Length: 97
Image (cartoon, rainbow, N blue to C red; front, side, top):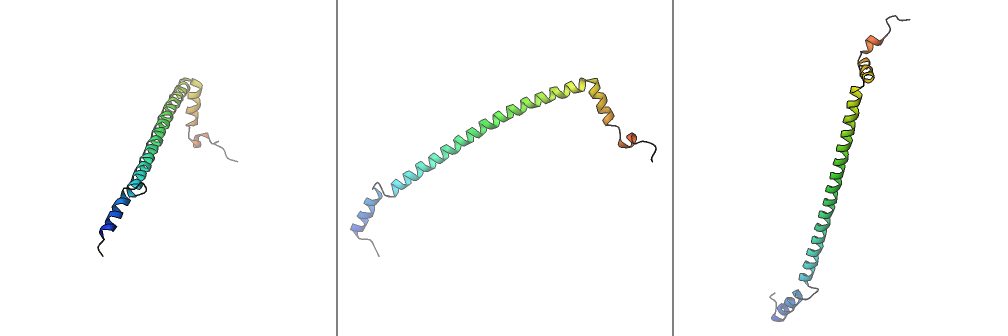
């Protein structure tokens, strides 16, 4: 059934009212923008934490490398490592009871 002219005027005026669909669209857009802004803020915070963790791991790796280098330079440690590499058969006693 076609709308009368009074019905058309009423629907047109509702679209321009503050509580009409254009106000809802603006509120929805603002909410979406706020959610996107929060997501970017969270992403930035995560990137900063990842960078800090990488720096910490790099520092730890440097310390471990230095520790291993000092152990390799120590003759007593080097000898102990060579003894550990001897196969288990060579360590077994030759006589059995």
